[in-house]
Image (cartoon, rainbow, N blue to C red; front, side, top):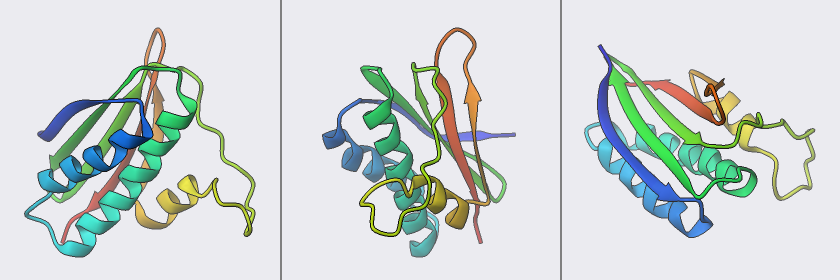
Length: 126
């Protein structure tokens, strides 16, 4: 059974990302510091991508837990799938998917029928 730890909406604005990251971390309060830091980094990356590329006013964030697996979902109303940028060592952007590849146990994108998508990542707790 999946248990929601937090469910909330934020404005699609870069200034809202630290607030959302704080709320995700607060929901994970019982975990270890490194797990919370990794979740904060991945949350920031997924939210920044949604804010920058999705044509939506609000973004839904859900933090779910099932046993030792935590899943963070970021939902927007833009049906376009995120695109992976080619690797570029000197670029100041385009590393979000590489961060998810490195830190998440699994991650993906699920289209929402009609219009929208959910970008999610999962990690295992100790």
